[in-house]
Length: 446
Image 1 (cartoon, rainbow, N blue to C red):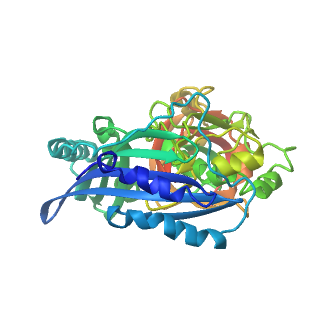
Image 2: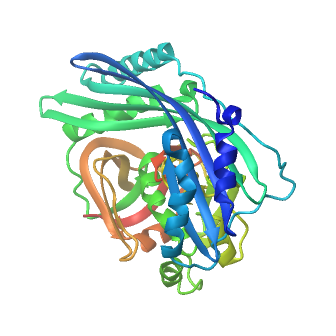
Image 3: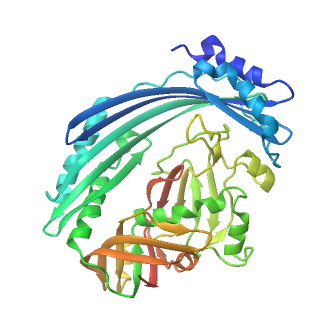
């Protein structure tokens, strides 16, 4: 395939969009993906590639978007221009300007290299072996797949920005089945990492074994009130549901209501929440967002109090805040929108999880989620169904097959009395969500 820089396609489309007083932004993505799947019928290998362009035009507070593959690239300016008069006028909508000190020079991109199929096979084999060890022969893989992807991206504007960057992502998805005298239980688990060699295969296998064996080998938790310890991967899926509160000014009214216009805390003073595209352990390692803005670190909650917002260029203008680099393109054919990179609870004030466990006189350690969390931000309600271990005087005493933790989300977050130093991340939203172990004492269950 001929690079766009060789035939001038990219530059000509951008130039064609920059007429009639319009500001133009052109985005190109090239990707390669390998997916290796093993199931009861055998092994299959799928390799695919993508290349597409997306154009946004800006004029008078309006923006219009169009996207296509190479075959129809030259029609993008006409498509976007035809949609522009029907677009809604909104304050702050304008062509993103180049960052201060940014180099203004063409950055052509090429196709990324093909992913390594041998590495994908090694990862699948490693997961199966780790699962056999963790499940002690009681857990089997029904289906497992490893996906290795790499992409290169370029964004240029008629105002002079021209930048390029690349990214990688490896995922492992498996359906596992646990067997015992009590029956069978199956679950789907997902792991991800920015690089294949960083996939937490052993940890994912232990998590998969717990997901299917705890419901089979434990018994329901019967206490009406108990200290609740949330495993990092359980807490992450609950905390991650807060992210939309910080998407620009979209939920400004709701956030104000939750904190009585900032007079009340959103969470415990122990909790600070951050979005950081560069944090160690995060599943996203970003350089630029979907508008070409450099990505970095934004503190959203500082010791329980809201302190920041995630922004694209329009929201940053409306809020008079700095650009946070959170304009995310889920696919090349989608317009950028505000989303998370690595959204997590800051573990810096945390202590050892064993110290938290030792402080529990009678409680529940929620080790795994049994279903998707039910969170209603508008109603301030949540419900999670978990399996784990009963805790007595700082020691796990028996397996718990099922327990429901529910109530007012704000009360639960304000009730956090301890956090661990064991930050872990899971796939969530447009990036990853993370948390250390969280302790909430004397919570009413059921």
